[in-house]
Amino acid sequence: APPWVESVQIYFPRYGRTADELCVTELGAVIWAVQMATVEFHPWNSRRADVERPDEWRIDLDPMPKATFAQVRRVAAVAKQVLDELGIAGFPKTSGGNGLHIYVRIAPEWSFGEVRRAALAFARELERRLPDDVTTTWWRKDRDPQHVFVDFNQNARDHTIASAWSVRGVADGTVSTPFAWDELDAIEPRELTIATVPDRFARTGDPHAAIDDVAHRLDTLLEWADRDGLPE
Image (cartoon, rainbow, N blue to C red):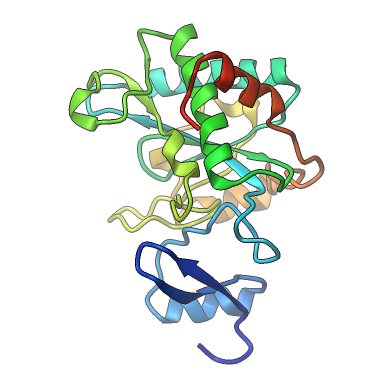
């Protein structure tokens, strides 16, 4: 990479190696990455100031093969209800595929393992409220193909998902697109592509513009994890 492209060095214990990871801090870095054949951007959920302390909790609603997008919408609506009960602001976006993501800014005070555990506690609460729609079963072969998997493991260290506004590497060029909660019932992910999203952005702006205004705490979710006997 050229010297003006910013990066951070990250250690990977599994391989006993370090790697320089790109930090996209300006448009020029995006252009450089694209001309190096980058299509999708998959950032970590932590920042270079302290890469081991996530400042984002990600709720990944991943429909199994026979689940419908109507189910995904239903799960997202209940997820918002639970977040509201917790006093937490969640920011939804399409995945660019068949699911939805909800991002929550959190205080960078917990490890990846603790954030993952909190995410699992939240997923289990969704499963209790929507037993006919939600699964938290880890092994794919054991999941009901008509359920939506709440993928809590996307909060584990070195697990990433497509960023907001990232193009996806598919033929129709879908974009992982932020939207407002009042759009949930109408949003159609397949209509959000590189051909349509620029005009949408010009009209609506960035629905995630306020995401950094408040950093939330995970204490209640970790209490739920203790209550449910979830592993450390």
